[in-house]
Length: 154
Picture 1 (cartoon, rainbow, N blue to C red):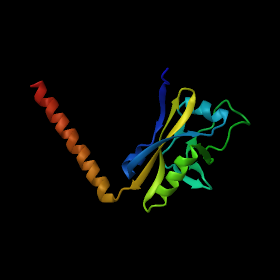
Picture 2: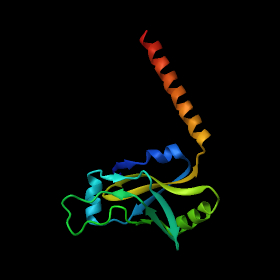
Picture 3: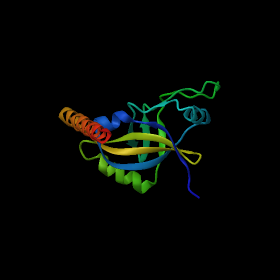
Picture 4: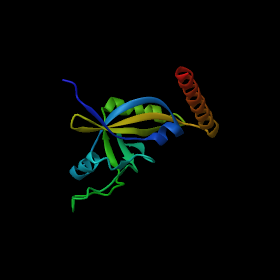
């Protein structure tokens, strides 16, 4: 039986600011009201990042809005959350992030069955000229698509 995957949020800024070298899947440690808030799609991954402390991965500045009907059980929206991965994967990531210029960035958040998963990207920062080049390529591709569509119509 195949598990259904339902996307919650994407980090579009990460694709703009970084070159994504590799992608990894990790579980995330959440409390009940946070999961309910995620089901409503109330999360922001925009400026979030990951760090590794003593062999454990943590995600920082991921904003999960407090659940409206949750009272005392609501947690701090910007609290540091632990990610769940196998030890050998974490050790591999420690080695890769020690290299200069590499960082771990959450790319997306999704439900896999009933569990919440985070897609992590091993990323290298883009320079300003890289961003301009990517935007120019995107615009050129869009112009080509538009021209092809016009040619097919006539």
